[in-house]
Amino acid sequence: MTRLARFVEGGFRVETLAEAEGPVRLHLLPDPSAALARGEPVKRNLYRAAARLDVPHLGVLLLKVHRPRGFVDGLRAALRPSRARKEWTASRYLRGAGVPTPAPVLVAERRRGLRLVQAASAARFLGRRETFAPALAAQPPAKARALLARAGRLIRAFHDRGISHGDLHSGNLLVAPGPGDRCGLDVIDLHTVKVGAPVGPRARRAQLAQWLHSLAAVAGPGGRLRLLLAYLGARPDRRVLARAWAGVEAGVAARERRRLRSRGRRCIEESQTFTSDVGPFTGWRRRDTGVEALVAALAAHDRALAVGGPQVLKDGRKSRVTRAGGLVVKEALLSTWSRRLTARLAPDRLRAGYEHAHALTVRGIGTAAPVAFLRGRGRVVTFYEDLGALPRLDHRVRDALRTGAWSPRRKREVLDACADFTARLHRLGVWHGDLKACNWLVEEHGLRVAFRLVDTDRIEFRGEVDRARRMRNLAQLAASIPRVVTRTDRLRWWRRYARGTPFEGREARRAAARDVAALMAEKTVVVDEPIE
Image (cartoon, rainbow, N blue to C red; front, side, top):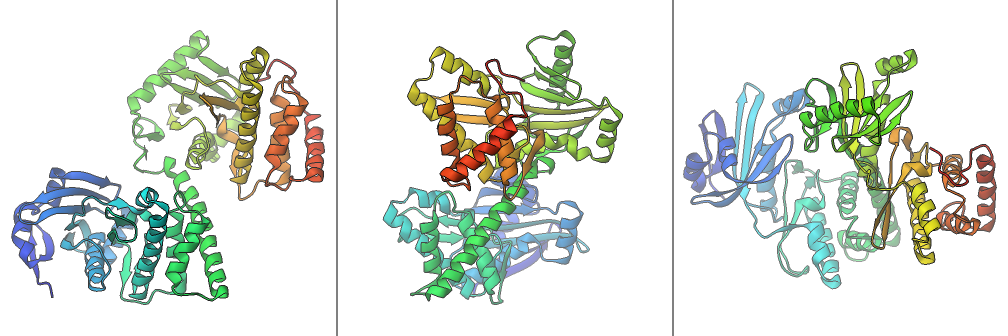
C-alpha cells in the first residue's frame, strides 16, 4: 500500500505520496499557479490549465490547476468534490483495478468555507504518446484492427470493474509508440470518472457511442463493428449483437447532432475562440481579432459608403455591405418602425447570419467565416471573412463557358461538384432560403473545386429538408444560372443530385423536374447577364 502524506500549506489542504512531500513543498507550493507558469503549456480552457513541469527528484509531471467559473460551477464545486479531487480518487482506483493510467502524485484544494478558490492535481507525465485517433490512422491495416479490438476489450474491462468514464473519447486514451497489438494504452482526464458502482447498460451504450463517435474520421462501420465485437467478447448471440449495434449507432447519430448544436453556439458563448469582450459595444468577436481592428473596419465602412466605389457591395434599404479593413462589413439598417421593434423584441434575429455562418463552418460547409457581431451606438454590424478574391458562381460559369476556359471534362467536374455540394447541404439538413447562384462563391485550386455560401441570414438547420424546400432551392439555383449552361448539362446535374435521394429513378426525377419547372415559371430566369 502506498503511504500518503496529508498537510496544509499556503491555505491548501494537500494529499500527496509520502516520498513526494519534500519536492512538492519546495517546488509546487505554496502557489500551484506560479509553478504552472514555469512549465510548458499543454492545455488551457475556461475551467483549467495544464502544463508539463520538470520537478527535481520527481521527474516530469503534468500539473493541472482548476478554478470554478461562474455561479453554477462555483455552486457545484461547493457541494461536490473538486475536479482535482475526483481525478486523484479515480486515478488511484483505476491503478488498483489494473487499468493503466498515469500515476497520481498530488491533490491540493484551497477553500473559504465551502467555496472552492483553487484546486490542483499532478500525475506522472507520459511522454511520446499520441491520442487514439491519430495513432490508429498511423497503423498499418492489420495493426489498426488489432488496436481497435484492444480498445474495445479495455473499455469492457473498466466497465466490468465499476469504472464509468463520463468523457470517453479518443483524446482521453493515449497510445505509446509501437505496433497496435502490443503498444501501451493509458486512460487519462479522469475528473468525470465515477468508480465503485456497477456500470449499467444505458451508461455502457452511451459511453461506447461517445467513443465510436470520436473515431468517426478514422474508423468506418466495419471498424465500429470490430470494436463492438471485441467489447462484447467471445461469439455474441446475433440478436444481442443486432440490439447492441442498433443502440450504439443510434447513440453515435444522437451525439453528432448534440455536437453540432453545442459547437454551433460557441460563437455566442465564452470559449477558446470567441469572447464577449467587445469594448463599448455588446456582442461577440473572435479572440484573434481585436476590438481596435473592428472599430477601424467600421470607420472604413463609413468612409466607403460616403464616397462610393467598388468597396461598396450593397447600399440597400435594409442593409449596407462594404469591403473594409480586410473584412466584409454588413450593417443592418433600423430604418422602419417594424425593424426597430424587431431589434428590441427579437434581437437574436439580427445576428442570425453571424450564427448561421458559424454553424455552417462547424458542419464543414464552406462559407465566409464570422468574425464579430456588434450592437451599440444605434448600430447593428456583422463582420465576416473577406472572400472578395473568389468569383460568384453565375459570373464564373458565364465567363468560363463563353471564353472556353473550361474544357468539356472540366465543365463536367464543376457540374458534378456543384450537384454533390447541393445534395450534401440537403442531406445535412441545411436549407438556404436564397440559394441563388449569386450567393455561391467558387474556389478553384488546380483540379479541386469547392464552393462557399454567403448571405446566411435565411438559413435553417432542420432534421430533414422536405421535398417542398428542396424544390424551392433547386428552382432558385436553376433560374439564376445563365442560359449558356445547356439543357443537357442541367439534366446531367439533376441526375447527379438525385443519387441516393427520394428523387432517384426516372419517374421520380421527372415528377420532381415538373415541380421545379412550375416554380421557375414564377421566377425571373437569367438569360445572359446575371440578376442580383
